[in-house]
Image: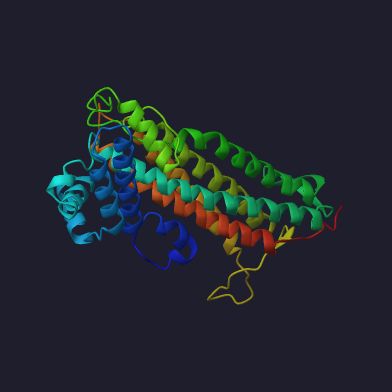
Length: 348
């Protein structure tokens, strides 16, 4: 990601850290260590080799320049990482590293390990926002407002009615997250072509043991079935889109001619009397940005045959940005929930 002034409104250092080089390396090493132990448990590789592999994974210091060069050459970081790690382990035991696995197993499972942490943070922020809106409803829910349909005054209702239109979709989005996580937080292990056929008929057992060691769910190989990744991206877009609805409502209600809410605003360089509804505007922009990214991510479903370099790489470009965008939007929405003040309509 390019660092710009936009980082102040569209970035999130906490979530970005999970997509850093160091985080990616850490989770890929966790995969290799767990794979070796799982295979040793089943007698597929020597126990002393698994111990050496695990120790090397814990102490390995990757050279980012070497891995970046490998990425440029191979289109995936896996081969360069495995080569460097084998050199550290030594020839006798290094030959058992990555046994029966492929780069897609390494990269995808590493991603899932990081996504597990990402969604934990996002859910915590979502819960915090829900509670903030519930508190706001308790404080100001009785204020009388004028509902607006098709941008025109309609009928009277209350601030609680308005807040409920923001709150209920957020509560549904939290329930959706719990429904989809068992489909997403699963190990990827398929071997060279996704059939687990190169482990003496014990590939399913290896996958199950690997999942246990990594505290992930077990599942059939999903290396060409990217619906889980896309489903998570769609959820991110749903959340940011719901926040965009809050943003656009607050912007419209804050217009001088409507004056239904008061928001702390941003200043104008040319008109000091203005108070611009910056937080609401940011929420709208982030929602529309993520909606566009969701459409791009859906193209990753078109995954050619048994592995696609292009569809797979598309996910790396899009999914991290969607997670960061959603995290930023949740932070802005929490600020809005803290600061918004409803204004009674004097005409009702």
